[in-house]
Length: 436
Image 1 (cartoon, rainbow, N blue to C red):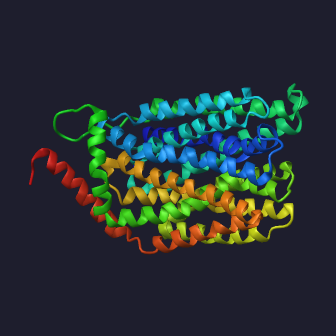
Image 2: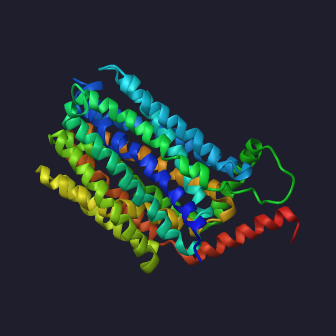
């Protein structure tokens, strides 16, 4: 039976999504691509600035991808997941807060701060994801995971709505122009992120390292643990197959999130229309993410993921033929229906096929492949756009990733994955206690 303490722990954990989603919406998906193209990289050809932005996203993803498994292994050994989450969140908050002070035309400095802010955002999510196994019981994993994404859509959307209002009517807020409003929006994201991270840090318990035996230095133990992780993943063939499929389809999803505004600008749509479309995605995404939690519990997480992938395939094809701004609005609403669902059900599905006592380590690899995928997508869009001279072909290329990812997911057996994970968890415990 769920107690008040359980609910406090669950909502405190989920509120970190409310906190850091402000960065994903206002900065990553919204104002940074616009401000970068129109202010920091003003006068540069659209395809070139698209390539610059794609390279920035890919660089951040490469760094996080290499750090993720190491940090995950260290955190599992030393029971310091919340501490690492705090370090990365602080990096993201500080770098985001510094963006308003970058001068016009200084695209190099803007890119550098954006890369470090993205590393903070993505790195913190490794440890946030890993904490779910100590917050949610197995039977509620889908709904709790969905709650996090739903609160992220709602919280990020509310601040984004305020930021949009500031840019449209700056004088109402005592600001001189839209440019000043965008700068203040970056600061508001940093403050929002910092304040709403507090519940997780205070009310979510730090899982202890229950592995018997003498305690070791968490850093050296983490590196030692990393050496065996590849063997574990290879042994857990279901995990390996799922991660390969996830690597591909989440690439398509992340790329659309990060590059949609840039793509719309390349087609000549007004920035006002693009920002409004993003806001539609946020508020549609809130109830839709909760609905996908129900779908996961009733029909299975795998079925829900397939539903989302199918919709994304339709979105990429529609995006290729899109002509009018109203179509961008409608596509944004459709994406909002499935985006959080695919993300949340992927996370909850993964928790079922990995050893619970090594969750941060395995989520390190989960995030590694997710971030390596985000290396491919933005560069693929930028490269195809430059090669063809037509941005429409760049969005069409993303459909390949959804097709291949869905095909691999079809061969993932959840029951077998759960059984193998339980065997590995018992084997790990027995090897430390000396039991045969």
